[in-house]
Image (tube, rainbow, N blue to C red):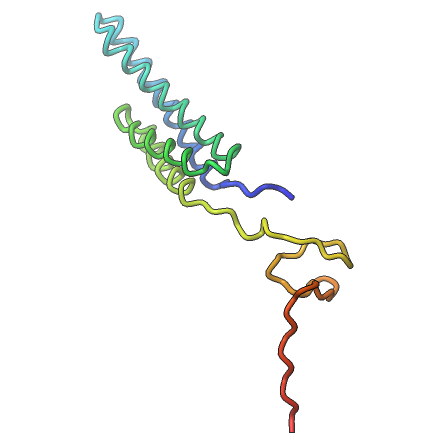
Length: 154
């Protein structure tokens, strides 16, 4: 059975990372102009900040999908760096918004109950644990509580 993953958080964070990285490239280009004009420190700082934020948000998005058990850590990283990207333009502002939403979704994500399944011994299909009777073939699972008997109709 496939592992449950925070897909919405991954997609939004990935798009945010792309926007922040593109914004970082624009800022890096501006930083190179500062370096040419003799303000090397400002230029190098802009290049570093712009590129690092975009790359780390992309990495956080990928890790949200690859390591869903650590969703809180990667969600916080995406959230914090998306907020921090505001100093370089926030990924043209759309990256900031998508990163905030993606990070929050990554933090609050919970695996669905669909992961708790059993195999019906009669038909071999997967059945959710909350079912006491297989919906496919009617097999009653061992240890399942029996429904109360209805009183006789008079």
